[in-house]
Amino acid sequence: MINIAILGFGVIGSGTAEVLKRNAETVKAQAGDEVRVKYILDLRDFPESEYADRIVHDFDVILNDPEVSVVAEMMGGSHPAYEFAIAAMKAGKSVVTSNKEVVANYGVELLACAKENKVRYLFEASVGGGIPIIRAMSTSLVGNEICEINGILNGTTNYILTQMKLHGKTMQEALKEAQQKGYAEANPDADILGIDACRKICILSALAFGELVPSDLVDTKGITEITTEDVEKAEANGQAIKLVARAAKRGDGKLYMAVSPVAVNNSNPLSTVDDVFNAVLVRGNTLGDVMFYGAGAGSLPTASAVVADIIDICRCLGNQPEQQQWVKSENVTSEMTDPMKADYEARVGTPLCK
Image (cartoon, rainbow, N blue to C red; front, side, top):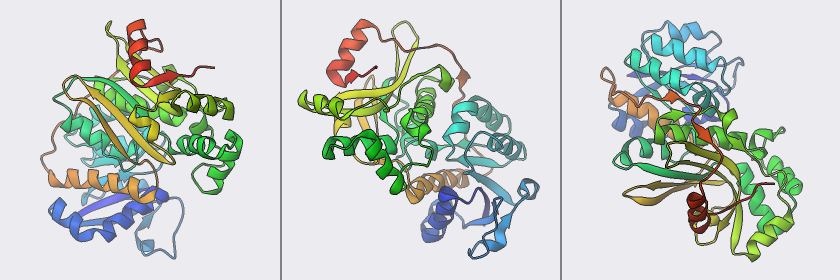
């Protein structure tokens, strides 16, 4: 039996427990042994939950239990998620996470700690919910030199823009509806200002180029200034407005990174990605373009990615393969060269900068 601990029993943490229970036989077959949730760390008690007897409030209980092989962190935020992950890996426990903020801020240190302690730090669920983009870039696409990434990485903003296009709603009307449906938080700033998408493109860019750029150095514009008139004008021009996070390597070695609304050409597959769905368009030097599409958020889709990471680690207990290491970098610009700009507008669309 392989024992794991879940940190945070919110939407994703509870979803992870549900996936492990619902697909117990499949997980056992894939992992090579039964995977059991031994502890759940949370500030709250859940007396009505079937996991009530596994709730703990002290992380040291998990840290000091040699039977726990994997820690699944779904707490959100950088702290104490970072400190808990570091401590767990130093104690010989591998860590998986859905927490894009901690990966975007501390990915360099976390991967280095995993290497030093011969464990793994996996984060498939941190970008794209259930879309297997991290694993694809880490394995299936390694024979390619990645040239460019374009992603619709935030379901809330994509839902809002879809409602504006299909039903003529204003941004505020569509946002209110997104909040009512649970797609947006009461404070939606991380979504509508582009912060969430920025953190995710920083992670994808680091996977592609090995350099983790601080998110505050990436030129980031959200959708707050997009009007119904903008949407109508784009549609008349054969385009659809999407919030697109972008990363590419310029000829001079600099990383081009930006997040902003883009009037995407209808000939580009990103233009048809609607509602709360996410998509990542990756361009390789030998493969060309390949798109990954699916549910970018939600309890069970995201939890399925967490469970996939847990299974990956369980398959290699005692002999974890080394992971790619990143370096911190400020080698970033928000400027495309003229040839890049012309090529981008022809293939993808026109970034909207107000």
